[in-house]
Length: 169
Image (cartoon, one colour):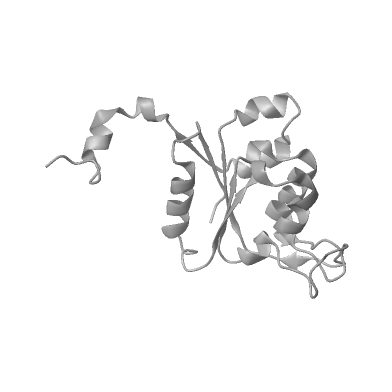
């Protein structure tokens, strides 16, 4: 149930590892929600992650909408490229980790969520913290179980030849 932070270069299989963590956990029968943090426009990020209430903004769907954290309740959420996330949104992710609750856009109350967060980055988050681009408190909350995936060039042919997909007959 612990939070996991996966470090590795682009193309090392961070998403595959995150999915495996979910599939091997007690949460495997619940949703695994993937979010590309770098691809979330800042103007939509909060409503996408936390949902919104009816009438929260112009164009809001009647009846409101569940956010990704609500959809992942009792399951896992994968925050890919967490190092790209805006500081203003990092505060809200920290609240989910600390309080285990979300507040929908336009909402007046909080909703409890039980979500395991698996985050991934190709950035050096310690350096990002030092530079003021990533919140230190969020970094330590995410870095409960750190996993480092080595680049493919360092994995060697022996690893690949042992894998059934690469076995030579």
